[in-house]
Amino acid sequence: MKADPGQKKLPGKLLFVSLMGVTCILIAGVIALLWWIQNTGLAGINPLLPTISGITLGLLAAAVLLGTVLLLLTTALGKDILFTRFLRGIVIKFLFPLIEFIGKLIGIQRDTIRQSFIAMNNSLVLSQKILVKADRVLILLPHCIQLFDCEIKVTGAISKCARCGRCDIKGISELGEKYQIDISVATGGTLARKIITEKRPKLVVAVACEGDLTSGIKDCYPLPVLGILNDRPFGPCYNTRVETPKIDDALKLVLG
Image (cartoon, rainbow, N blue to C red):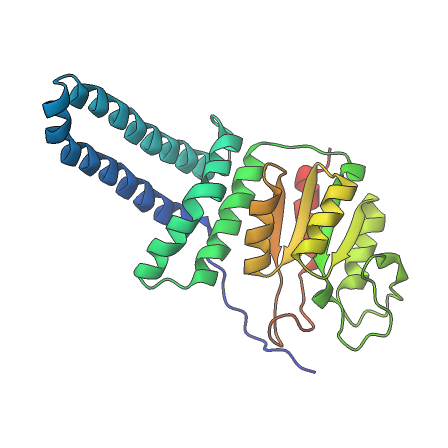
């Protein structure tokens, strides 16, 4: 089997950060519009209500814009400035669906937005300068990283791998031994969540496709997750690949 030699360059965090900025400006604009619409009606009830409403909505709009600026600075500088963990949660839980919707409106593919989101998430996680002991880190792999026709199924126990070198499990297993890190293989999101609940790591290095990584990052919050996209030379969920040095580089940044 031969894979496609050409690899598409992945978008960086700048795309998602730009969409996030546009989204937050739109949210602030909607807040201002709501205040303008209700201003006349509130004045008829009590002359002080428009002022109180204006201050409240103004503070909300200012908080949205300030949060956006802090995230932009954190992402650009790679340093945890203020409330990074909290703001990452706001983006993951609330802003992401809006950003995807706005991206779709202007013709940006969903996977492209998700790729950029993963890059931004990794940047925010690393900005916290987290250092974790090896026994509290979990490498989480999708089952499709193993060859489809391999007779030895490593789901549940990667130690079963014969290390023939036909897939990337061999190199990842060697990384696990090198750093003495736990590695698990999951067949889907439900099993992945079960593994994380049972093992209770302090940080996860996850390999998956855009959709699974995005949902995994959202489901695991506030647990920090570093996402590494797999390569799919033969299509989704079939004999996927991953660049093992990317996992190695991620581990070097977080192991204390």
